[in-house]
Image (cartoon, rainbow, N blue to C red; front, side, top):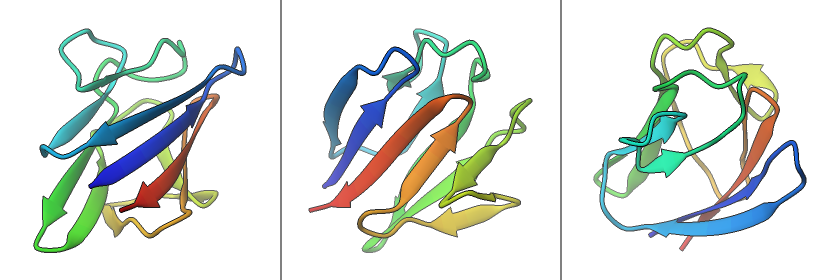
Length: 96
């Protein structure tokens, strides 16, 4: 299971658990994780599960996806306590 703790620009802290993958992240209501930050693309990033690993990919977003303050170029593996940054939204990763 993947747990994401989201801290957005309004300082609301939301914790969401995911057990079905892939998880799409963006502003569109069709995404699995919908974020209201206007600096986030309509479909911004995707999290997939491959075997026992969780992988995040940027989906050609305008402002990029950052993992631990480093811009994701292709796909990166998520680890416990990683920090994903999308626009002005910070997402803490917890692997259960």
